[in-house]
Image (cartoon, rainbow, N blue to C red; front, top):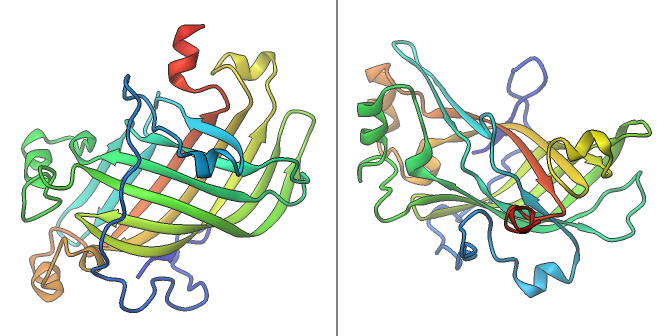
Length: 250
């Protein structure tokens, strides 16, 4: 079950179970291909026609942080190699941003826990099986509950629930993720980061290893005290209307 976190870090339920019953071992859909340079994904025409495409920018800092808080060990893993895109509807009013689609890939091999041997173990078949399933994939199918929370001349921020699915180790689960989306029109300030209009996406939520087949025996896992079944994911992505490939050509 995916459980979003409130601002104090405590777990709060959202419409009960957000994972649809029976989806635990659904077949994984076809993944979007990377561009030739590999710095983003090729946007399918069906998504490109839905609105304006924003491309994930290479991470200067951690784009995704994973936390396992177990009695014996507190493990923190990070990755700054997420690639992908998000599509926002053209002409949406500032007060009601609509996310139409998107896809993000996080290479399992990019997860850094601070201990190289532990990183190697994480990629093994018994854990995330990176050789057979090299990416953790989040597909966005839409959004709901968009609400303007802050606005200035330089940006507008919205709270929104992103709808879609997450694929881990070949297992696909439907999820709904509370997030904030900040729109930043191109300016002298934003050009210091990247050309084009920018988009900031922040989300913090929780997943269970047992939901994705990473762990089969929750009782045995808990008794070891070393790894928690509940993993907190903290996502901080910046995206731009100019893709990383195009920015390099300029």
